[in-house]
Length: 149
Image 1: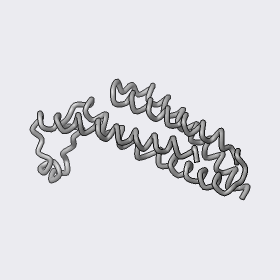
Image 2: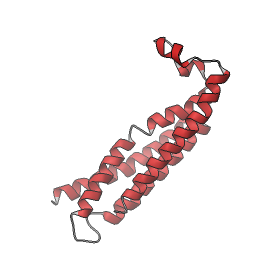
Image 3: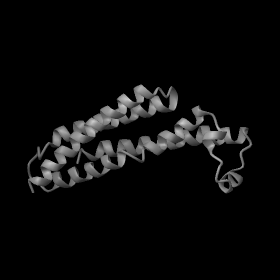
């Protein structure tokens, strides 16, 4: 079940970004004297309009960690189930899948670090694209495994 290690790593990283988001956002909201209740009642209000981009980058990245990674979590669970159903030590791409899962997590962490610090869009896009290639390869491995059942 080594495929689950990168899953847990990305889950933990998501919580790091969550903490970082609130560690920067709450003081910024306090300094700007933003009342969360009045913000919730105003359909035109947005923290993107009221807080600095550098503060909001953490929130944007936290949201991004709930988008494409959902496919990663799903494919990792499929691979874990496939590998638990076979007696072969190296079931359908098991070694490659684990390696690709760690590559995916590494690119997502790098993407996060770029987005929450310097937010260079072309660099972010490159890292995102590389993570998606790793994800696509994981999906192909899972598809091959499912087709062999």
